[in-house]
Length: 117
Image (cartoon, rainbow, N blue to C red):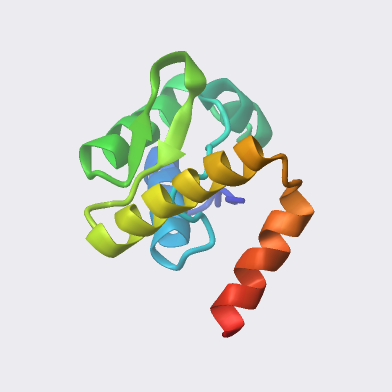
């Protein structure tokens, strides 16, 4: 997901923040993606928990992620109304197919066919 360059003059918290922001911007981390916990990412990157927490806090202040209490931290729509609307439509569709008893693979095939039409 992110690599930290220990020789960089850019502080580690900023490298984490920039890495996540870049991935949100280019769509690698789409709206609704759950980010690793602060502890998990800190462990993975070999950083202090407070370093990653600062990155997440700054990303949240910028509107790129949102924290949903104990559920975790998720990529937000970042003010992009079309992505926000698409995310809401996807959530509605997911709830509908679940209620109809349609499995995920079939639901995805339906979406793919519709997008190609």
